[in-house]
Image (cartoon, rainbow, N blue to C red):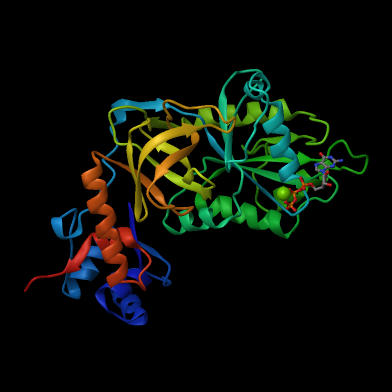
Length: 371
Ligand code: GTP
Ligand code: MG
């Protein structure tokens, strides 16, 4: 598991980054940079050299840590998908089409609010898919910085009449680096000028292993405008997620998730959209996020409907926060309010003492050795 970046470790143990990098080289690391994320073992080794020790959950730094995964409790969950691609290639159009065409939406009169994420039920296989609506925004960068990868699948949108462009290449690089599976949607295929075969050839030149050329990256020719093959795109996502076998524990573990968005609602207080990734959130659950916590007062989905239990891959608006949590904060359930309060107080104190260090989680696990 990833633990903390080289520069954060340097801050905590009061070392200079170049010296620390040299030290790491002597341990056999090559070509590291300041933002490399060390695992706990190596962070411990280095910290020890500088007279620091790694402390797991002691009373001077009380916090809540994820429990190890119990394989026996894993259940299939909906895939979490982000849409990426070059400007104007049709990302928003595709998301809007999916949002408005979902069976569930039609039953409930459409999606009434933009909560940063939404689920659809596919027309053929009746499976659920969760789409994240705002992959470019700060929350995602923050999550990525913390080594978290909430997305299972990237849908790469490429306009059939424009082909591969700089941000297409960026998206390909990102997906490869993050180890996220990719599906290509060649968009605007309704346009007479569209040339999907050229797009396929161009993608293959940029090392996308397209199925047309014998690879395993599915390519779907769609139109977000007319809805052409949008059902095929959804089925492709479902098929891939089944192959990937995406799973999470639903019961008997403390809930975990991420804050996707947050804002103050007039008269209603702090509201945060939480994407649940583990366990189940219910009214009355105590959640800690960043430097605040919440006794869940109520939850709503993207249709404005009250939710009684939010399972993994489910995005929900959560009411009842003491203060506004930040987009990108990780969420973890506390067993009671007393513990939540202690953890939040402690995080606030820590943030105060080491305010130049960003990785609060790692700092919590390290302190100066008593000699
Ligand atoms: P940014 O958010 O600015 O990066 O753009 P985007 O990728 O979200 O593209 P958007 O969905 O805003 O679409 C850009 C333009 O292309 C709009 O004028 C859309 O109406 C048009 N468009 C999107 N999809 C299609 C399509 O399938 N066919 C046609 N003919 N036009 C499309
Ligand atoms: Mg857009």
